[in-house]
Image 1: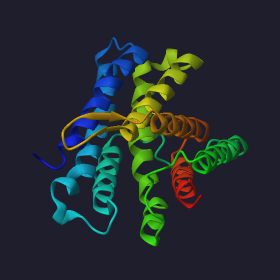
Image 2: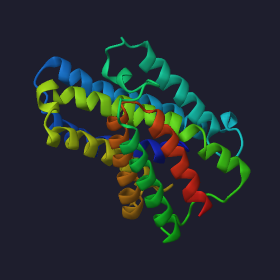
Image 3: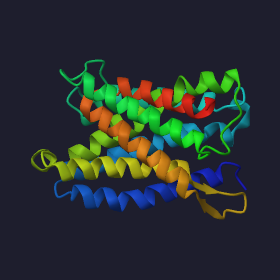
Length: 244
């Protein structure tokens, strides 16, 4: 059996669950709406392919964490996003520019995310997390946020919002549905696992925690208009979960 097969099955299962939800939220009618939905999952699949690559070819592995997979995913994801036209939904949030007047709300959202992560760690929700060492801390403080915020918030959330349509996007429930869909995919990726015998395991606690964090990061992205603060908040949340 291919060593990476269980991971591919987990990714495929997450897509099968999230795809109908994304259609329900966006209710696509036009060709461009369907293209936006396809683009959302296409970038997600590209990222997952490169993330899993070191598991399929162990010679690519560096250190004790997935440095290579994350680096490949970052390179591929940002290459795709930045190659798009400037008005493409995936590029909307890939900017250093912050929305005017959003600083205070963004600070509150980041604080709540950190408090939530700290509380979950103290209560023991993070059982099974990697051991504390300099490599793990350095990894969690850098690559995960850079990679995952581009995939889930810039590309996936950006395209789902675009698929909803400009008129409906003005309604709070359409935006909430897009955030929810993004959070569900983020949660499933962290909660669905297949063992070597290809039996599926679902960690409800991990799904709830990562799903809520994913929703918070999506809200932060919408509030700030950029993935810059979500990248920072993402990495801080990861590090806090390890240290506490």
